[in-house]
Amino acid sequence: MKKIKVIQFGLGPIGLESLKLAAEQSWLEIVGGVDIDPAKVGRSLADLTGVAALAGARVHPTLEALFAAVGKPDVILHTAGSSAATSFAQMRPALEQGVSVASTCEELIFPALKTPEIARDYDVLCRNSGARIAGTGVNPGFVMDILPICLTGVSREVRSVYVERVVNASTRRQPLQAKIGSGQAPDAFRAKFAAGKAGHAGFQQSVALLAHAMGWKLDEIRESCEPVVATSRVVTKFFDVAPGQSLGIHQKCVGLSGGETKIKLDLQMYLDAPLPHDAIVVKGRPDLNLVLNGGVAGDDATVAALINIVPRLLAAAPGVRLMTELAVPAWCNPAGPAV
Image 1: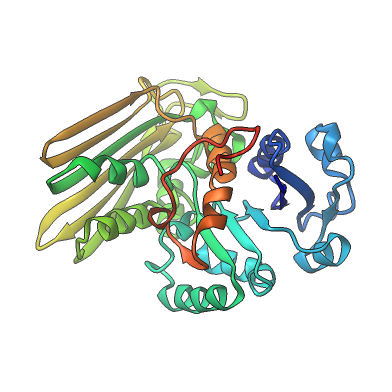
Image 2: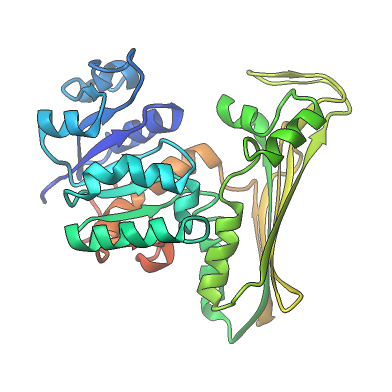
């Protein structure tokens, strides 16, 4: 079986974990990485990950520099931002040459919501070059959109979808704890959320993808977010939060049609959140109620989603693809995916 050549674009915490998991797959060949950090450029991926097998793969400052050094890969694993417009622009040199992209960019879950013209332009580009690009992940990308969509496969009728996610953020990486406002004054966090600089990204895109899959035309998508305030001191590996400071977020997003709430997503992500879980309620025929006790571990599962999408992405038609346009998500055996 011919190995799929991949590179890692973005070498932050998620990008490095992506490389470690990719290195365990016998069907993948890692040929390099890209990062703008001058301290990483030129170093071997083995130095950055501790995986000795990656000693021959190095970090380059741009895609163009990497292509010149090692040639074109089959797929880029992209973990470098939340903006669809920015991610498209970062990946243009690859997409123009027919290289496909699997990304954790939250807005790429449904890029037409915020950037419809850009999404159309890149769809044309990909169809002409033979490339594909798709966003994936845990949330967005699975728990609050793809999983409930899959549940409705046994429905004769769907009237509404509700998804609740409670996450103990104390177990998560430092950038996420910071993004949800840990240790900040509540009003300062509210101001950052209002400016689009805090909170959970991709919420509205999950609602839009759900509506798209259900064939519902939404009149409005409403999103709100409030800090969860500490009543006692909470200490994590990264933050020491005093009473009165923010522990994290309670973020909601609803999709309305004809004045009726068709979709409601409720995310509680804060330090020491008790009883973490993911719950899905589909009202229809039949009514469906699913609870994942403990919830889906975000960081580990995000990396898994990125690796597992690769063969499904390459099997899809060229273009800007949605997760609902690919084969059903499934684990890829490290020995090689089924052919």
